[in-house]
Image (cartoon, rainbow, N blue to C red; front, side, top):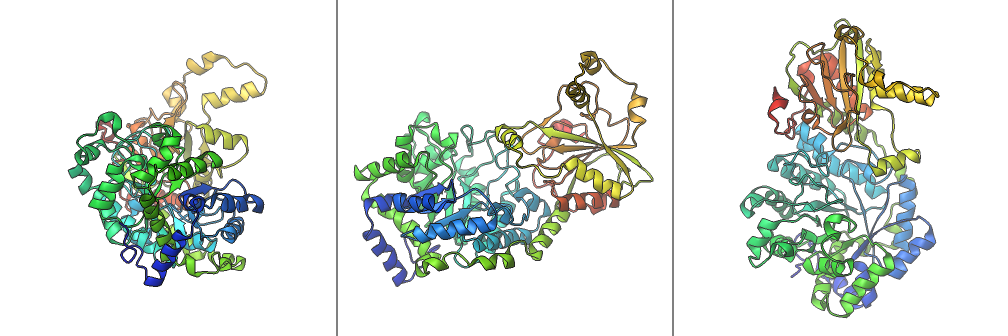
Length: 589
């Protein structure tokens, strides 16, 4: 079932011989180990050596850290690998997905807003040049999902947008850019396609509801273009596809429909037979609820391989998962034929990358090469260009607001609206990690440099927190009943910028009544609403008369934002890559 002479492998006879002879010489333990990607938990040599010598891993992922540390870790891993290792990274937005000092190029939605396929090509090339310099050889990118549901927070900023043809073109451009790097593999995700369900597969089920005809014209179009273009690997998503699964197997009962990673109908019949994909398949992370809520973990591991996935992403408990898969192979749950097929794809891709022809000490570049690659000026330049070309003036009802000048609007109040913080964000804050410069402060600095008197709004809740911290007991009446005349509120400013700094989901306005957090005053004075991460803030602030999306809050983006604000509406080059009005009638009023 595997043609090693065809795309994406394109192997010669001696390469094929290496694949076949290596598989034939493997012990059962070594065969099973090749099925696993593991996330490293330490950089200590003893630990890394055990991963390779005890579990015989086929691939590794890691948590981003400085490039020099990643490179040394990768050198150690390859040193102890009997079969050269896949080392993968998440270079969806740039080399910063491979190492902490890599370069951010731009998110999918940000590049989608530019309508420039060359930027997607540059992302694939530049991000993975940095990744290759630290010893990675595989990208879990691009994200080629299509955004249909504005409430989907899992891929909304990661996808190139809502137009299947644009997603296909930009995903292909990313892959082509990546393929300029010798010995580097592209893994498109998340097959069969995220973006319809509002739920996040990390936390719940995720469903693609399209009929076969609808899917073939949209997600199928994307994957067919990538496959025909030489796509190396695919990451299977934990996504239910009931209409297509039933069309393939009419005998399926609703309760028997599985997410793609556990579904032979989707991973074998659709992907292998109908789309003709000859490359390797890896599951998405196996801790996600979209996969784990369907059966016991002991049943799930071999079920993923039997469904058509070749590699399993991440141990839960290493000993438990490894032995579960080993038992399934020994007792025939995973057949010899299926094991050989999976191993042929895994080793075939390693041979395609030329890993089998390199000496161990040549699998990872020398340390001195890092300085020549990480943070190149050309990478920073394309980041700035994308940041300039993506900014989108989505809604512009008050046609005389722009350009902003100190003569028209000397006093500018910035209202910093944040989103609800999830568990990881709270944990990182408690540990003093993450963050970066406050976006409201960044915007204030840039406006003041242009001659504005910009200041940041202090909400009633913030005032009460200060009083409590000072040992005072503020009156709750001031909070609920303390209102000012409209003229008193508006007299302190000439214009308001509502800056929605929401990384995931919906804005959180607190419980203030009559304060400034929510721009109830759009007809009282000029208001500009800016979504600086999630592009869907019109759903919660439909009354906005002027609405702009920047897609992130990077310094280069805010430089370009202020330039656009002060130049006028014609300066905004971005085009909405989704429906930022969220399909809501009132958001367009």
